[in-house]
Image (cartoon, rainbow, N blue to C red; front, side, top):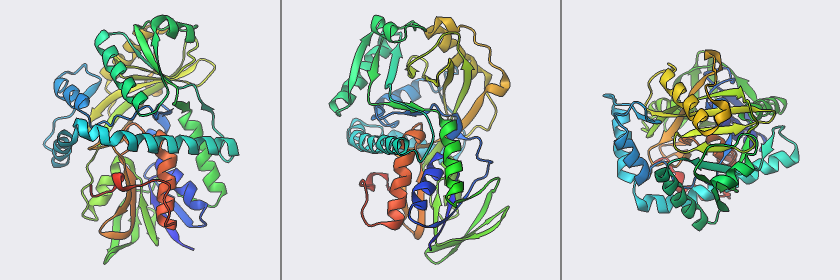
Length: 413
């Protein structure tokens, strides 16, 4: 029986363990935390095949430069004398082109739809117990400029074969007949879905433990021991772990692990915030408030999660109250019934998404080590792409036949 150690117990690592467990492997997952936090718990829970335009695009490059010194922008770019961060910026700027976007669209669409199908299969089989809503996603806007950008993106998605509807303010208020958002218009991506990420994670953890997967919590990795072209063991604060194959799915911390193997992976953290509240009026559809880059995820019974912000570059774990105020202000501007939400400090979650330089995840083997594999760099699409990433990594370790071509996600691109 093959012994596999997975470093990182977020949604990518757990889905990798899930699909590998079906192959009969002896699996151990180690995580530096207690598996009750991280981006897999605090993210928006959106499954978004609609997000076919990668983060590395001309539009995002322009926004980044324009907002570089604007403290009120939803996008914050950290400037620091950090070689890894500088290299990431340079590579991002080098690929943020129209041709890169054109090549990436079918790749992201195929990966996202594959992942969405896997979610549907898991839900229908009853193997995992989590709510899954197929209501699509509303992209809402107030300013004409943002509206023009959204309509242009909608046309790109339509051309890629996704089902998209353009909506007037009146049509949106008919759909959201309780909250009646104050908007100029919007776009409904009917291909999208959403789930409750914390419920999904709890179900995954429970299912893995029942299937015999060993989960080691609060286990910080200290050293990767290698011999020739193989990694052979890990030294951690909880002891030593030997393995036949090693899978690294530790989010943006993956970069520090891979440096021990002399691999520079261009992934930077993108910090975001979220909080769950009971809204005054029911919100029925998940949405992105495009003017402020705020995500809205309804879980039923007036329980709604709001999230936003993108602070590129690691700036620590401090909660920036200015960002929280921006999210609260945007909520009140779009949903009049929710003006001046009162949020307690303990309600606020913050976490770092692993953002690759080109907007595509890294999925595959490490070229210089024949038994080491990586799954990271999913940016804001970790939940969306987790089942597909786990499935592909399991196929890579155990099968010759792959469900998708993983060349676009190779480590040495």
